[in-house]
Image 1: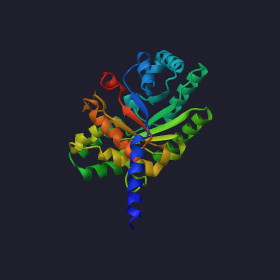
Image 2: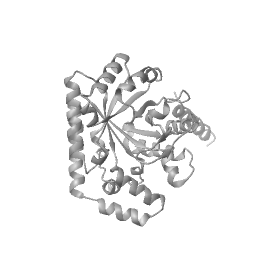
Image 3: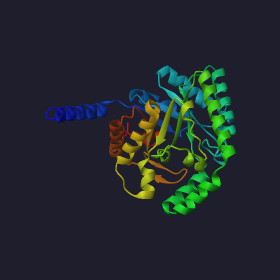
Image 4: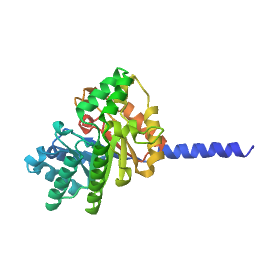
Length: 309
């Protein structure tokens, strides 16, 4: 016993220190900046070794001939900055990917990728944001903020549609396979609420967001302290740490975490995000302690201030 406890202490210190020393492969989400305007940010992204997940507002970009996105991708390749496309539908079409718009979303992503490839443009992958439509999400958050749990459960049951859910799952899987055949990597991002201790899909079905984990190269979960604090009040980074542990345990090296919010956002609801880097750095340390090696920060628009980069 006398030799066992010093060895255990050494092992704990070694692995804890190693976890904090592990570098995190970092990316940033840009949702509101036109692709052409992101070109001026490429030098900073390169200097900070940040990959870019750039929103592509489907319909808007098509109507402009994708000129801005083409410029961004060409310049990013020249500067060796990794870019992922983040396709989004119009708000009235559900905005994010979910069971209600899976067919429309997947078809438009195929058209987007085919068009870019025909122009000889390259990008690392496609990030797909899996969330309920904005109006559904807001209704759920409103009930949660009022602690109306019975109404939350009732709403979830009303939204369950076995046929739509399974069809959406098939559509998402086919799109991921289609992208892989064309050499495009895939990333699925969704809510950390799915990281429950019981890994069934009941919550996915209630929210209409089928997670097809096996089809994706990367899976990440939004652990936004600012969002949880909106409902629960002031929190520390422990929630981020626990989400990281659960994600890593369930999905292994595929697992990542999304942090935020940096700055203020108005959509889908007003959120006052981090005002300075201190709390974000705490979250990053929590991820390192949990063994997470890949993360994204939301959002780049709030990080343009020199304090953040």
